[in-house]
Amino acid sequence: MSQGGSIGTHGGDVRPIVGVSRCLGFSACRWDGTIVASAEVTALTPYVTWRPACPEVEMGLGVPRAPIRIVADGGARRLVQPSTGRDLTATMDGVVERLIAGLTAADGLILKSRSPSCGLRDARIYASATAEEPLHRAVPGMFAAGIRQRLPYLAVEDEIGLTQPARRDHFLTRLFTEARFRATRSAATRDALVRFQTDNKLLLMAYDKRRLTLMGKVVATLDARPMADSLDAYAEHLRAALARPARASAHVNALLHALGYFRHVVPAAEREAFLAEVERYRRGHAPLHLCLAMLRSWVARYGQPYLARQTYLCPYPEDLVQVR
Image 1: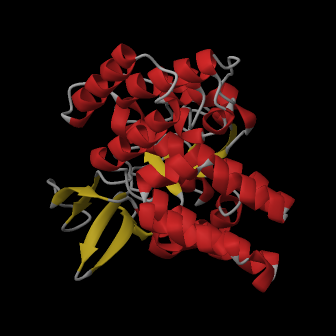
Image 2: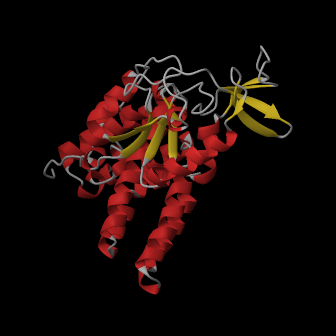
């Protein structure tokens, strides 16, 4: 039997930089002067470096302040303050431009839901500044829309999404992977990029096998162009690969690929139990983390250096895994 091994810390070996709506536990800056408690944001605090901001305060509206709303204007949208009649659309555009500089250096962003500025997908839009009922209740806020237009591959979620296991897992996977790549990019060496590609092979296999192949070609041709150009090309593929949640079928493929490393050491009964758990996951009857936990236990028992370094087995700190 091989010597036992252990899974690398992966998510714990980096500290993501995360922009966040200031009202989510950092300051009483909502329009009514309140603060919003978010257990999910609090749970992340030991693992990330926060960059709080409030777009509405950045506009100079103060705390407390008269409410603002999104108003339909033909095919466009405007941000107005009904009580004063002020049109704040251009002011918000300026805030987006000012805050985007800090977000280009961030690994992700967490926004306040249902906000006319920060709502990711559930802000309200009205026919006029005085309309009593909204036309729709599922549009992005003006700040959120501006950031997504300018930084389309930034990992963005709201505090409600962080309570939903699938959305939370996707966001945290993107967040910590981006932070690891930021460290790789800072090193700017061939060895660092080769190591990143190797350590994330199963993760990328699960998310986008085609992009994994393209990223492999970038790594294989590092000597053909400047390192900065290679890192830019690699980053584009990486962010595109992780932009959408992985399909269950792709996860199954990655899990079975990992199983192959243990075919000669793990007893048949345990392999069959693993395959049964994978099938339960495929059918939507079990969470992915149970399959990953079985793989991690085999790494600890039998030793498998290659798998021990695979971020797929632990893409972010295990304490942040949440199943409901």
